[in-house]
Figure 1 (cartoon, rainbow, N blue to C red):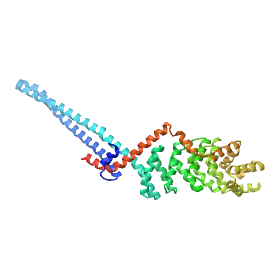
Figure 2 (tube, rainbow, N blue to C red):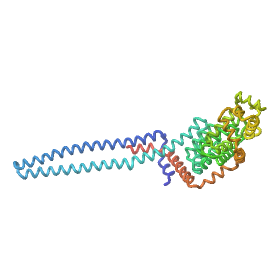
Figure 3 (tube, rainbow, N blue to C red):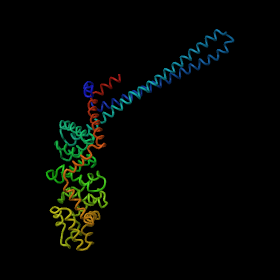
Figure 4 (cartoon, rainbow, N blue to C red):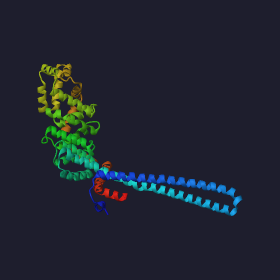
Length: 426
């Protein structure tokens, strides 16, 4: 009989997971208390037997003195009585030890494993259910639709090899970002493939994707292009792959406002990592230069005006010609009018580091890196396919299928566990 038929046979009524879990814990607690009570009673019984044995021993000693007075036949009777009580005491002690062994065996072999297995199954289901139901309560998507999405998430988990809970958590982030249709599942699926390819956690990647698409407009960049750019940036750059997804989103709102594309942002960060910056620091440097162009200091405006330019001109260049031509323009101006002018145009040291790293001695190579990121196409699909059959991902898929099965079993147990526990308690 398979699990589906077994759970269908056992199912009787829905009592709620919380009550079932509490009942399982109470059953374990009650069983352990019962064993303790039995042990305490056996201790008392053994004490009584010990006291009785002591008295009989004293009687036996006294019989030796009485032997001379009452004769051998009477003494022999007392001796037999003492021997009988000794035998009784030994058998009662053996019985007590047998009951103790049974109590330990029942607790160790039956109660504790059943309770532990039940808690594992129900915990898997409860965490997944909670993550999915958060979308109902906090995002406002209908419960009936989320129930259908739950099935899709579990199937997605088994095919890609990311846990159902990880995908459910990512789905919450996607839907809370404004994706309230089935398209949210597509974002999660592509993000999960990126995670399987080694680009980070599904939730972090999905968070970046939604941030990019919301900043630039869903009609201006696709999920596929966003993830191709991310994959190419990780390939061309240096450092921990998972860091890119975590930090790029902090630059995107400023870049989008200035008309700088996501591929330029990603390529710039990748280029700076080649010069020794971490992805997090590179993102900070780039964000600061954008902030200075959006809200320039007075000395910046004065310096640019003295060189025949303005922040307004530079902002227009960003949108029309791109990031690198604009940074090169700043470098050319400061080279012409003196290096000290760079500190006046870009007074923030972090912003200046972005300018220096991108337009310094590695300028030509940086341009090649950024071009490669911009021209990315099908990069994620290639990266995902390259690792699809490696042992790690095969194990991840097997593990994800097991977790999905535990969730299904937990959903069945929540309807059957209380009646079973009630029968066991009788």
